[in-house]
Length: 334
Image 1 (cartoon, rainbow, N blue to C red):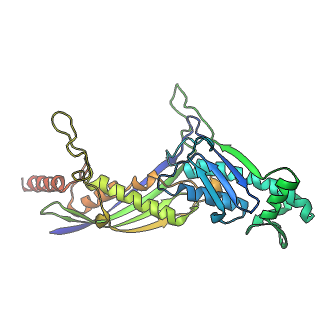
Image 2 (image 1 turned 90 degrees about the horizontal axis):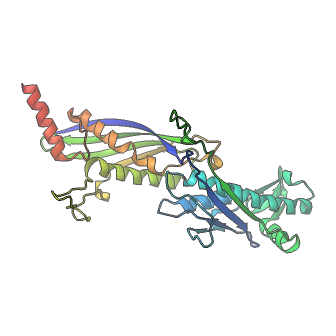
Image 3 (image 1 turned 90 degrees about the vertical axis):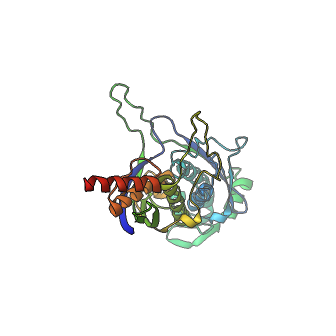
């Protein structure tokens, strides 16, 4: 008989680290046609980092994301980046990109100010224009200002910046300190059906609420949450490395190392909780690894709700669940 259960799990997760130096650097160049080139050492591993970094540069410069050409991961030409680790890219590298773009923008403002008859602090960059605040009718195309900066003023609009979360070494005596600069939070709820005659689990639905600061690209964030849930699903129910008596792995390939496919995925509902972080680029923090942290716990809590057994070793295979159910029944019968 199939029994339904629901489980909930909450988590907090640190972004980047501060116990050691954790810098990123970026260079932003505004071209004479009004586009921009961003140089970053960040490596794109499928999470959409380069899209988000390009959006951050575009927002600071007042141009479209499509106007930003991102050059990444080439150590011959790009500045240093600590790496796509600790879910730090949007937060740490994003701050470096924002600062570099603002430096390039400041050069444009210095050049545009006398052309518009105002002070640089009275200008803003928006819709591919440098315009007077509260008087957008007075404006110049960014392309014209960039050309003026380079060809007339001799000061190309180039900004380079680094950003490093405040480094706070741990106290060697007490072990206390501030190992991280910011945190993200999430709650996931799983709904499952468990067959109490076979131990088989069907995950029907997962609702995931994640605070990642201000999402720079909500669609990419939702995609990362869904991807993290798929990893958490495998962690909870399927994925296991098996060894023989000599310590050799007996399931070293994808024909016998079981992991979720699209057919195993449940209905997923994602809720992004906007929580502006003043230390992040435009209020953003990050979302990467935390997406899979609460999934397994929520699923195992749902299994307990359904059939009343606790599985404490992963994956929670049908064999383990059925054995736990039988053990529980035997204990009740005694």
